[in-house]
Length: 488
Ligand SMILES: CC(C)[C@H](C(=O)O)[C@@H](O)C(=O)O
Ligand code: SF4
Image (cartoon, rainbow, N blue to C red; front, side):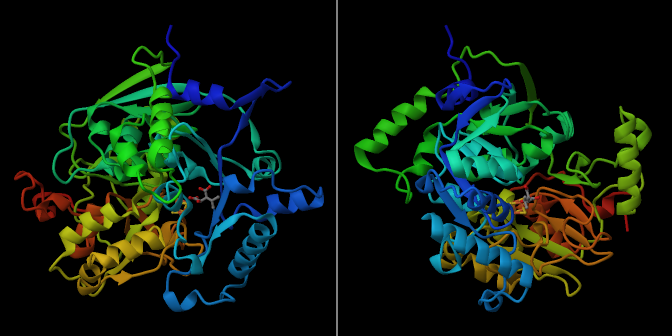
């Protein structure tokens, strides 16, 4: 008989008991903490005079409020609220014996970038963090869940959460990605097909040839945006790519211990005959780079497709959302996103702030100049990413092309620091959310896309198909001039 999916197996291994209310008590193997969602939870522990149950399984970093300009990282931080949050995290971690990757550690960065690159996130684990993008860690074949304040308190105090088991949808990605099409495009395609609520009540298991071909950084980008598709978590079964990535990382055991772990990791993979609640197949052979045209990540098209008319959308909710989106973005149905003016290019975040993202973008911007009226901002996802890019000279390519090369943090992904989109500005962004006001002013506009597309938009000052910049890209790429109706 089949043991089932990775989700079933990992869940069962971590289930402590069934609670009287029907939920399961789930043990959490890795608890990640950042400055925004943790202070209140630590406060709750203090009120009850409780200690942190598993400080060795708990790791903290500062990301959301982190200033990205080197000289603004001096303490106390200029912004009072940010200083308060950072101070609280310092106090809470040092009082409880929790490792904190602070600015001086050289390892600070976005939680979901730092934990994977240090080898903290491993297959078969349960990972929790007070942050919706904890799904990212599922790229290793773990269950990564975002949790709220009371659950953060519970994990701190007991190492466990009360949780409901979800259904599992297998998303089979067939085919092979063309040049200039990336993991980000795959997840945007999935959300286009299944919608922003499509995953509610589910976790997504991504698999199939196109997923197997991806490196870990691409897999992380896909799992990262599971939440944008409404899923509670997303994961990919571990394989050689996973093990090779993990080998030698700081928190990964070596030698025989590593081999034993691989054996365990192999055992928690979904069985070939595992039963899923649902299977969806998407072929990516012919997909073009995707961009959003609206104000949620499901309002997305392949870059040369026309923007849909609200009346063509299936539900009233989608129709109303589309009306609001077109109004906000100042776009009309039938128009193309090609040629849409861009003021800011933002490259970074827990979706696309890793070395390979900067590498891909550097290939496009090399020898090009950002126009005077475009502000191009490159923000490594972690200090480790930054230093590796600098060691390889990638930062110089950005700087020479007119980009600002910054220190690590969430930055303009949600503008909790100084990096803000202003009213009326359009941002070509490698992030994961395009909600109104997300990147700063409520009158700013966000267009989500892959790092390559952000780089190309920075060069042109408008949305363009990045494959035009590839030596070996396809020959039939549509340029803005070829499109009859081009947005302003
Ligand atoms: C601040 C934090 C709680 C939030 C999240 O949960 O995701 C943020 O990271 C985001 O991306 O919106
Ligand atoms: S980079 Fe963006 S999505 Fe990721 S944790 Fe930070 S704010 Fe959230």
